[in-house]
Amino acid sequence: MTIKRISSGGEYEAKAGYCRAVVAGGFVHVAGTVGQGDDVVTQCRSALETIGKALSEAGAGFSDVVRVVYYLPDREEFEVCWPQLRAAFGDNPPAATMLECGLIDPKYRIEIEVTALLP
Image (cartoon, rainbow, N blue to C red; front, side, top):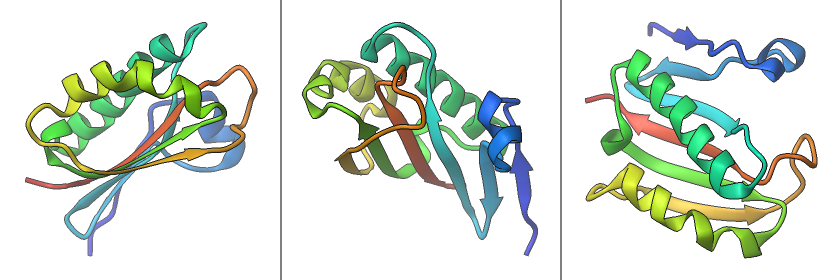
């Protein structure tokens, strides 16, 4: 099996020893991704952009995502992200889970992890 690793050059990739995405066995596994910005909506948009770039480099897109996990330190902030998530996944919504938990840095308000099936 061929494995392809995709790096986005993110700060924590080098520090923690991981890559943004791994393509293996017909799937694209995108690591938990945080975004930049001052609030959860801006960070959500930024995280989706980074994820979209990784999916594209792997040969997939949001319509190929079969699983998504959202991590938030405050579940009350999740609902304001729903419009962006609906826009990203459109008519092809994946199976989803939302977890309330601590993130690597308190400045981060959302982290998003996806798995996609290569077309």
